[in-house]
Image 1 (tube, one colour):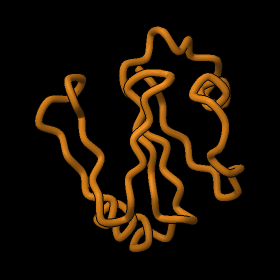
Image 2 (cartoon, one colour; image 1 turned 90 degrees about the vertical axis):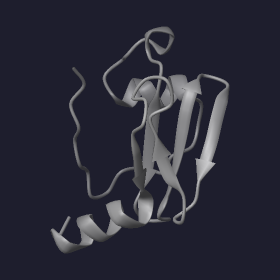
Image 3 (cartoon, helix red, strand yellow; image 1 turned 45 degrees about the horizontal axis):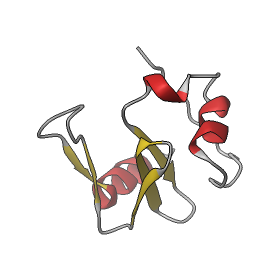
Image 4 (tube, helix red, strand yellow; image 1 turned 120 degrees about the vertical axis):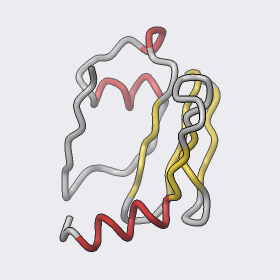
Length: 88
């Protein structure tokens, strides 16, 4: 099971999925089926379903679970509102 960590001063989300996964502790890209990178500074996210398949998600969009978490959907606006309310 993957763990979630919060960093107040995380570097920008640029680079390849492999580079980004290295930041998470070296998770092998071939074993990952879905990754969301959320950038609270820009209030956007990116959803990866393969190293070369990235879907940008704007503040009015939602994180979707695809075939990994069927039926899961979380509006970014709600996520950011919750984070702001908790002082994160």
